[in-house]
Length: 352
Ligand SMILES: NC(=O)c1ccc[n+]([C@@H]2O[C@H](COP(=O)([O-])OP(=O)(O)OC[C@H]3O[C@@H](n4cnc5c(N)ncnc54)[C@H](O)[C@@H]3O)[C@@H](O)[C@H]2O)c1
Ligand SMILES: [Zn+2]
Ligand SMILES: [Zn+2]
Image (tube, rainbow, N blue to C red; front, side):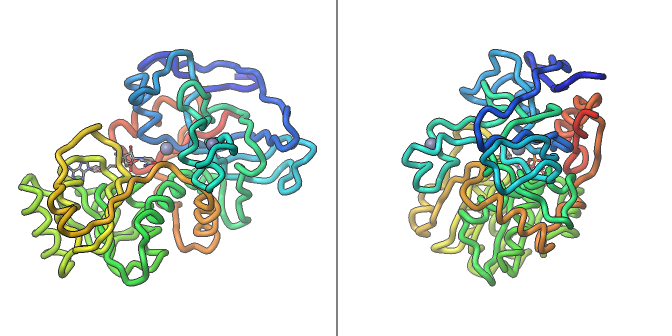
């Protein structure tokens, strides 16, 4: 299309356009300009595309979509020492303030002043060029492709969720939801040494995929009470007194309720999925079983590093999750695909 910085812009629900935006320039000594090569699409991008908002984050001005990207360094600031032009990098797309208490304690995902790609009012990475600070670009090892590099973002989500679950060697881990996030949680749990990994879903194709990919067992959720579903899950998957750790990567109320009933006493629950804002919660079971219940939001200190390391060592594989690639000009197709749960991950190629 001959543009300098072709970008995929959302104007309002279902109204997207390609726009030539100014090429970002180095303005700070630690700035890095990345030529974006591949971008994955996730549920939140699709939600902005279909609804123009997520909760209180409302798209008021046209916004570039996308936040799961990898690319090649095209320019670096004077103070950059760890990267050079031509390096291939995974891009961490949220820049915290670095000054607030949460930032200083290392939990920068909880920063009060986060600037996150494709979360209004900040533009996303579906453009030819994107600017990041040096320490938010993670050099890809020789053995890791740029396509796999685009999967580092959802993998880092999985790393953070699984970290929150404090998964230990020998643990039984149940993951509700076998979409990209759930599958990556299963793979990370395996890398952490979990001995039993149960995938739960209602979609048979996804369960089969999970079993081939990282799960040791699968369970198809049924439309019965949460207690009954949990009892069946424990029995069918031989979970004894209940699971050590349960991760929700579905956001679905019946999953969340079943999970609480399927945990052992003293077990740990992590909420990774984002669905309804409010649900009915089995609080008596949580109390009497002394469960540890945690949230998980994006990724923080060390998560991107570990995600890249898992790819380098082969402890986690993401190639098989990439079920399609489309050209930049066909970006909207990738959004349709995610909306209709086609395949696992579709990548959009950066503009030529
Ligand atoms: N915490 C975070 O920082 C973070 C980051 C990214 C995504 N997410 C959330 O993680 C979740 C998973 O993301 P994804 O991209 O894998 O989504 P996805 O939609 O591809 O996967 C969700 C899976 O849950 C399954 N599911 C839905 N209802 C179910 C039910 N009643 N019983 C059993 N399974 C059911 C679906 O069939 C699907 O396979 C989403 O809610 C997303 O918003 C959270
Ligand atoms: Zn995402
Ligand atoms: Zn901060």
